[in-house]
Image 1 (cartoon, rainbow, N blue to C red):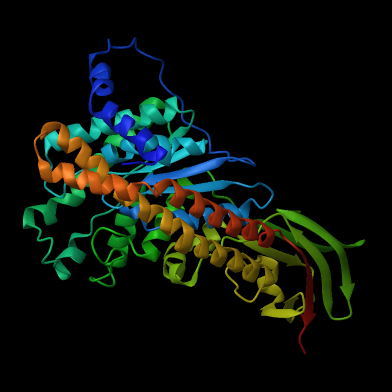
Image 2 (image 1 turned 60 degrees about the vertical axis):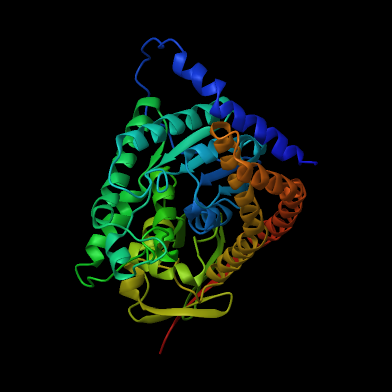
Length: 461
């Protein structure tokens, strides 16, 4: 029976993980105390770099990952950054180790974010032995990512919404009241341990847990049934944009998109700008006109994520696109961009500044939305195919591990043989999905280039 080269390499990795490697690490002599690690700077992805999202089913959902990709596609159109989703439903840290070589390190990433823990806690009240397994496997995972030349980015597990679980009982997965009342606290403990590890080792840390819980608590002050996690485990699109924002903020990437300030002076109108350049600024009989070339596009997401955008006030916080004009004669003005009316504003509002990032009428918003929809197409197509194909490998790896402790289990032997037969096509599936994703990526980088925009401000009668 022929097994794909991918599976052969991963089989070797799995055997090592379950045997001599872990034993050797446990037997190693303690290292000398190291100097305290410094706080890491913001991540810095450059042209040609690769970013890998490693995780479980919440990463497999391809939502928070997609929204972070949107941010980079829209905010950094001058550099081609590659993204790879390495999430598999049901994964624990051990499973991530088993496929690390071929599903993560072979892409030669610069950064690898790690979102694990939801399954590692085993959906039960705190258990010291379960936590010890998680600690060991996560520590090994971080070490191996570093040894592979990448920078690990640690992220807390997300929220378990016990209220949502109580309101939607699942007869296939009954949960005890102890589990419902305690599991969110278990995840908090796992997250705080991760935060300590990041602090001690000088790694970046993203707090997914805190933001999801805090926003849920605030929203339930008005609506006791509010949830961003209807099945208690997997955040819906609004919750996933909260997660994406947590990454952008905690990794040091949050800043305004652009600002245009126009001011009338004794020698005429003058412009100051950030995030782009103003040209051909001239006064007209009823207002102003100028050309604007931005460095980037606003962070615009697919429509299903909009409730999360509104909840966070995301545009103002992470992609502020402001226009401020001083010296206009009193009155009300219409703003047109490339001939399209995008709003009417008083001279007072314009002098205070208006924000355009959430205005769906602007050409730059529509351009950014086109980029987001192309990325959604990539994630719903080849990326989904790729992630679903790795589910089979995870089952095979677990059965191979279990067979070591049950050598006479004929059912396991038969299941493994069946898995290996089906895994023979995994390498071809990966190759095809990567090619299809790259073709859509080409379209994204053709669509995300900022264009010269013509602004006109006309005074209304």
